[in-house]
Image (cartoon, rainbow, N blue to C red):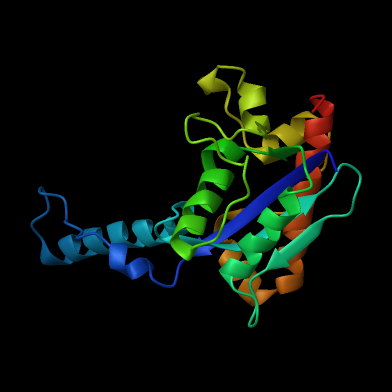
Length: 206
């Protein structure tokens, strides 16, 4: 298998509360009701972003596919832990020459690397080069698209539309809620994202 196209989905970690900061209201507010509301809004905004940091988030699911293969998805369940999910993906990468993701150098791989450190998971050799800024055998389609122009950043959804492919099936921001409410729909969402990543990669000649 020469390439593995992949995507991860994250959600709030069970121990995220230990990292909750102390929220303070705007200094211009004097009304106790408005002060309480301002603090509540700031706390809600912080909790809404837990899944974006490896400190406060966890890997809920990973999807991947080979050059022409079907998409494999593994999710946390009552019997599969985050360790199982990440380990299964790292094991799958051992047969690949290249990993292809979208915004994967900025998010997916650093997130997986950091969670692996926390959980004591052994990362396969060659995935991360400590003396390099980027992961050694990964192609990040976001970086390929931007081509040194940070202003050209684009969402996977918009890039799919630009290329004439079907749009995403929703927004992964609340993937954890979707997993709880409809696991089949959550899996289908992730499968579609992996297929979009592969289709866009091929359009780019990756």
